Image (cartoon, rainbow, N blue to C red):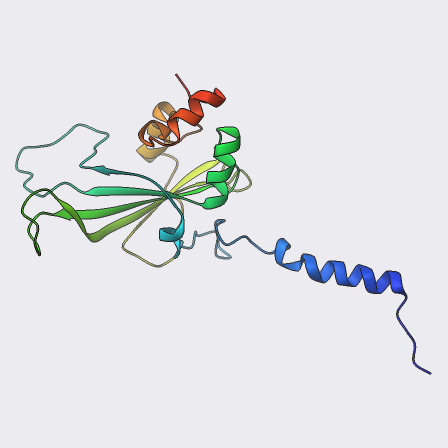
Length: 191
């Protein structure tokens, strides 16, 4: 005679099985190695594009002898964090931003004037993860590397600059024209 599982146990196991994908790490959340290094997000170009800057600098501008064309800086944020910001005007835990830095070029193909984005110069990532970082936010400078890396030390200037100048929750929302009105409307813009 075969034994049967009670209907209640069978139902509980079915519900557990259905919830397994929800318990796994979300695809747009930070992924770390066993020793705490951040894995470079490989799909960031599928995230929400926030803005692009050309030749932006945050420190003293050095123009003497600098003949290199300015860089483009493209900013992407995870879709989940973007949706949460639209609702609340703040960034949820596990938010990730990618700053993609690209060289600019002006001579190529049919272009007669202006600049266009060219080769990848580097990738930087800002992560909000209150369970890992004492100040909630951490910065990672991947450069062109695909290898996991550790967070920049807390003495790096990006921490103090973002803390003092970030318009919303340590981020430069003042440079994201589609999110600035939301922060104003939700009352989360730092003055």
